[in-house]
Length: 77
Image (cartoon, rainbow, N blue to C red; front, side, top):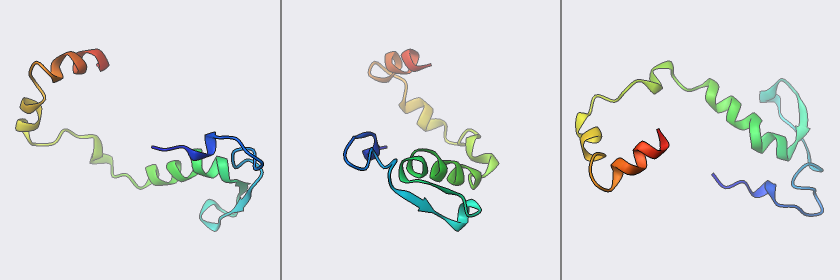
């Protein structure tokens, strides 16, 4: 995900831009905080609980095995 507000400028990376949203119970914040966390937190509340269950497609797991993917998968696991 691109994080454009991690750059700096006259608006101090969005920290100098006040925002107000009803969807956050009228909370006042700044654009950087909204972009970095509040929007993500709100989106995560709508993710269904079964989202993290394994998919019933064994061919996906099979296709990730092999000379190209195995070393990378072992490294990140």
